[in-house]
Image (cartoon, rainbow over all chains, first blue to last red; front, side):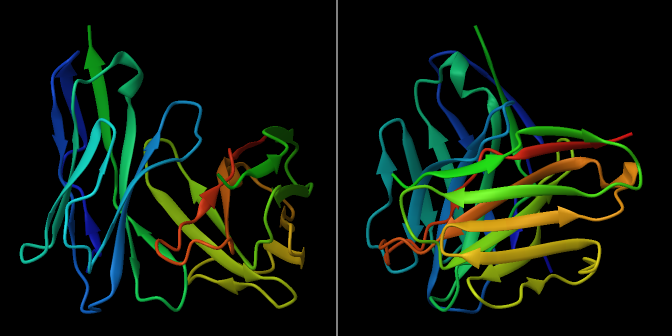
Length: 115
Length: 118
């Protein structure tokens, strides 16, 4: 079974608008961490935001916020006020437990911001 | 933040030759490094996990004799693609952990190496 599911292969968003990228996860471990990464065409993986399973509040980092719904096992990324430079592939990833750093990645969502 | 470098960024080699990719943690000691492979418009596929001073742990389906990983020091891991063939052409990304953030256990990614085998 897929541990991380991203159901949106590609999305278009108008500049200055908000966009929500979906991510659902599957784990039986009560301790886990959820990450979002941005990968522009250059290929580098850029860390955006982190949510721990025990965190009480939704994580926010500037224009990025994570809508964490634990009961639904979803961790959607919201990008507010989209910019042309936000055009990239976005990956949701999960680390299970605290014994190792291994990540499970979703298939990714390509975001294209239109002027 | 923690910085990870990879060298080379791009490499073209002939079929049958071997190519080595280096991954370095520049400002921290990396106790664990990961090697990923990524095909165009696809997700990252974990190939192996390497811990300093011990043998790498390969994921199912990854040929350990084909993809040799050496994590000889706390700042350097190498991936050698032996007897490369065109189907080995891909984007290879390393990541490293070991810095002090025990809250997130974040992996720090290198910029990637694009391998083309002709």
